[in-house]
Length: 397
Ligand code: CAA
Image 1 (cartoon, rainbow, N blue to C red):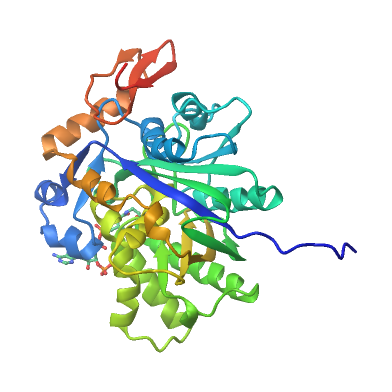
Image 2: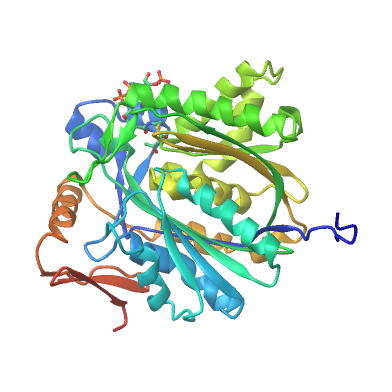
């Protein structure tokens, strides 16, 4: 046995940034088309808006926009790996991360791979990244989660669409969040949500997806506890996957009840509310959603130094994972809170007719050769398709 082992360095999130689509639609527009009260979406789902990508945006352009400020700040000398998590991939073979690698000018001595398991895969990426960094604390890993959530038009799921990307730099001695080592995992084969190869939109059994989510979260929490994870009462905030923000509130109440917690409903809701601000306005960003919850919490008014945050990540199909982290002293100096809030307000407001046109246009984008109109104000754009080859370029090109 090696008796000279030194204690492992702290590993976690050293930087985090996000991007979203150029447009937003108020869910009152959809309520009008569906003939329901806007309150069904504002209150019942806890959603006020959805992001809608411009004609020349997709998961690659959002991912590159999210990661660019991180590379700008830290450079890429220590970067060895890019893990790209998505459930709305743009190719069955090539990783979307390879396009991002070129757009950001990353070194060739970097591995790039795409991961898939519905909305869960960014959490797998984060754990894989932490393991790589623990093995060699000199290396860093860029984890990117990027998705455009699409359901069948005019279905009940349509108001739970959205689009967004989160990029995170995983490093030793992290500036923002130290990951604790205990994690809890749970897998069960369930057909609550999936997307067959022939379909551009996900198929979903809405009611089953809600109960499958709650079962999986309960299972992941039990495994987390059995492996030395913190007690429910020792956690200050909980970041849940948020397909719609009310889901996080429901799941948290459900978990608390199953554990016999004595916290009141108001106390429980207060643990979730600060995590919902961005998802409420962006909609479902699938893999990115649980990390957008973290970003909203970090950008909030409370000083979180030393606080424990638990993460409840869920991906239909289904896999869930629970893990936790402790917020590092001085974390605020690593954030871009004002710019993050401004980005949400800067989106162009579109009405239902324009939104439907954007969706129709996006669906045909990679079927035929096409030039995409110049619309986005983001740093990178999807220029079109030539001979089945997707073209990406800096917007300034
Ligand atoms: N004022 C206030 N609330 C109202 C209201 C009104 N006028 N009218 C209705 N509501 C409430 C309802 O009471 C309900 O709340 P509760 O569930 O708390 O009772 C809520 O609004 C939604 O109403 P419905 O249940 O009638 O909604 P729906 O059947 O039209 O669809 C949905 C809801 C099933 C979530 C559907 O949008 C959907 O299928 N979405 C996609 C699937 C999804 O997001 N699943 C979540 C778990 S799976 C997952 O997390 C992975 C993933 O990312 C997809």
